Length: 250
View 1 (cartoon, rainbow, N blue to C red):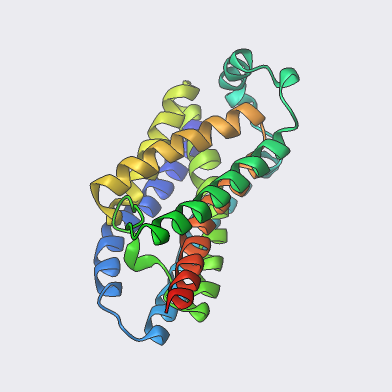
View 2: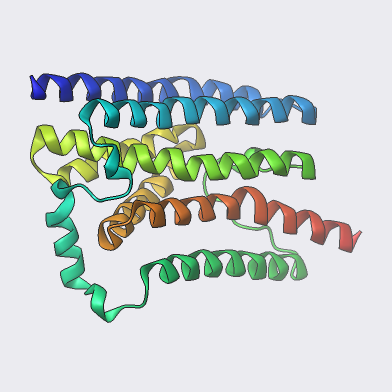
């Protein structure tokens, strides 16, 4: 019965992910043709609602069904072998506070991006963008408010789904934590197929890094914070600085 329940819940999660893979490319293609900011803002709002409803909703439903809601605050025992392996490579006792590390990572990314944009503007270089994400960036302050919510939601919803729920269900069926996280990471990359092949590759690598951060720290919320910080960098910080530099040069 327990195995049957895991299979049903995993099927629900895979159907949820498949919905995004199937529909996102068409929705994104339509979004790129929009010119009115009101229409773009409605799309941002719709994506936030759907992402939170599907990913966060599925996570809470499955964890409640499994009576594992505490996994949001405490790493499941099933992941312990990987955690011990990572911490043996970089012992926790020899590193600063893990929350501080997450803050430093986010700060370095934001600071580095800001400096890079200033340098690119000075030397008239085009900022590097990996994957088809340029149309997603806000064009005004009003749109930036929605992309801020979009980034925060992605940080939470995608982490609880791809770094906690999917590996938890997969390890229950496969009895192999490493394989479970590897499969969840690949699926995380495929869900971003609307960004093209380069976008899938980058998000897969990013997903692997976030999985490693979660396992090493034993704290899902640190991974959530870093993920949200990365998305805020691309969807809020970079476009805001770009607009400021454009106005100053004008």
